[in-house]
Image (cartoon, rainbow, N blue to C red):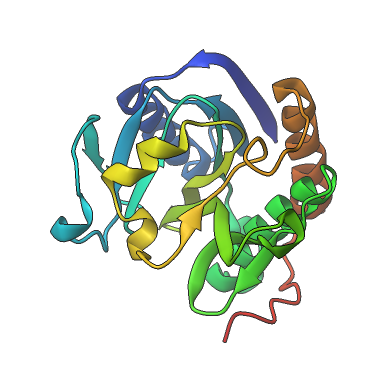
Length: 223
């Protein structure tokens, strides 16, 4: 298992090309699995379920991707984690839902280290925060999940909002959910450093995934 951390902004096409090459090499037994933490310049990506009407203002470049999901924003102040794992080697019977649950658990554990209760929601992908403890109404999304699996090797992954410009999300309907907003560690008043977040992400990824096999965790919001 290789952990990769990029400190500067990585162009989306460069990241996509790297993943394509790495996934093929993992599938062929020529490279180790990998988890890559990085940050993109401001852009929008469209998943396989993206609706044209959900692109409200193409103020940034728009990339079509093969991952699941709808429109997502990536940009400065957001940590992206690309996950390239061989599910067939890790599971006796490869289970996509179990993999998604593990991604959620990774994010939930990471957020807990910063005093944030991240939660699953039935029928909604990603990690959500109840805003009532912060003196606000409703709930908001703090992390997104969008993956692709080719011959049981995963790529794409997750994004966690640290301190992005939340106005940048207004150019899209994030993940097709117009009724809900987005939030971030900074928006919730949480103190952090990028280095501390990276360390928490790596530590919790190892705790959740590095046992080798992927067992289905308790995902009470998934039916």
